[in-house]
Image (cartoon, rainbow, N blue to C red; front, top):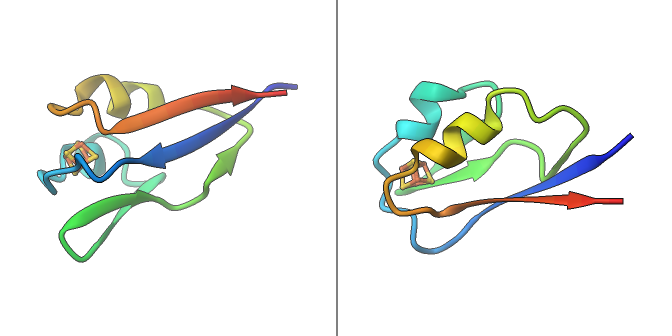
Length: 64
Ligand code: SF4
């Protein structure tokens, strides 16, 4: 089963789009978003949130 490492870079502008798309996996910490879990086994809406981020700040990396 693949797992995915999720991270949000400092490029985040705090627009909260990822929260709107995928509140189950992202939360705000001050002015920036962060993943609720750094490693997940189901990508779910996370890919959609990454695709929807206006500054490409969400990284999804498959880990074996
Ligand atoms: S969509 Fe991107 S820029 Fe907006 S809060 Fe989420 S990570 Fe930050």
